[in-house]
Length: 322
Ligand SMILES: Nc1ncnc2c1ncn2[C@@H]1O[C@H](COP(=O)(O)OP(=O)(O)OP(=O)(O)O)[C@@H](O)[C@H]1O
Ligand SMILES: [Mg+2]
Image (cartoon, rainbow, N blue to C red):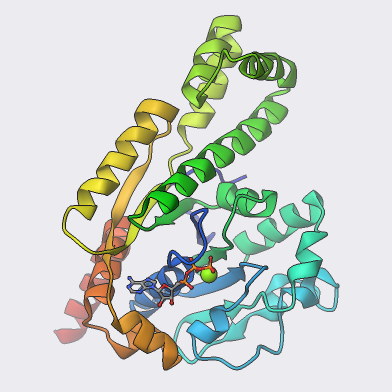
């Protein structure tokens, strides 16, 4: 299972990014499309998967009509695998897996089916795969977030969005913890520790780790080692003012101090009226307004998160000019 934000993907497997954030309407789909477009323009083979099964709409962000094939065909076994429902988009190096009409099928998805889908995602012929997750903290959202190499948390600088993000992070953390302890076969130990929580002893993941280490140092340290790999990335979207970059650092610090979760700040994306204009024109912002503040900010985030890709891209364009 791919559990960490390992940025040095040496294998032929794609790097899988999951975009979540707890709250609806913060800009997950806009950012997801823009990150993928940015890398596709550099020659990286990208796939966006619309895993927001409650409100699948990525095809609209890409200016595509109602998709012919969707995840529903996969769940209903009308096709053999995920690769069969890959749709070309109007943009080079960018394909789409649509989630339209898959909502009811997804609600009934068994854990095994979900794990099979995750295996198929990692087997797709691509360099980068972006999972656009729905709002909320349902098990489906949490499991895809955990499975990705990079979990990106998109928030807005509003108290409700920040609150939802903390709730989301906590939910992902405990979901991952359950998986780790199951794999290590130590359900009992963690359960008794968590029961303490019910009685008011344990309040945060950090408290829980301290308690586990005290009960059984060997097992506690093994779990802590695995959980330390959980290091999601934070994007503050629709920022209005400069101080929003400090807000990202403050949230990351709070996550470390109160939860013991190491959150990395990926960057801040400014509020930009061109986002709505491009949405209404059914064209991605990076296509319609490639030099807009929004596009600049997204490209800065991509450069930060894929330093090797950027260097390779520059090397190739210099070689082409010679
Ligand atoms: N940086 C930005 N500047 C201005 N408007 C933005 C920006 N980012 C997103 N928006 C606007 O916010 C709205 C919601 O964006 P989007 O659909 O991507 O959110 P979402 O998090 O995917 O929502 P949902 O949870 O419903 O899927 C869109 O109308 C979009 O135009
Ligand atoms: Mg969305």
